[in-house]
Image (cartoon, rainbow, N blue to C red; front, side):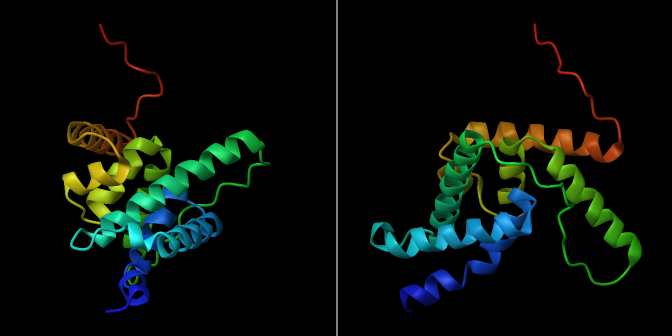
Length: 167
């Protein structure tokens, strides 16, 4: 299998994760393109036998963080918020549920959203998520639990707007 083909097989997953992560189709496409460019130029750094998908998600995570840092320094004019578009075949009720889920995910802090998407959508193992995000596995489990709880609260309409005080 060629290098190009190995990487190309993961493009749909990279696109899906990028769209869910950024909430913007154009920024997601840019993120995928930048990720693929870096992956192809740095492919010699990938260790044969390791999980290529996790390696690609690590690259995407790092590129995304770099882009966020760059945007924060650049002070861009914010684009209007558009809901995440997810193709859903079939029933109107299901489309509304997906729209509500996308909206709820967008309200979560980035660190929770990343872990939820990598575990729930991309079906990575906790160890893989820890490598992708360069955080300890305990942090992955903690963010996943907190993210799920916060997502549940947002979807039920009982999300707290104030921070909890910890003693």
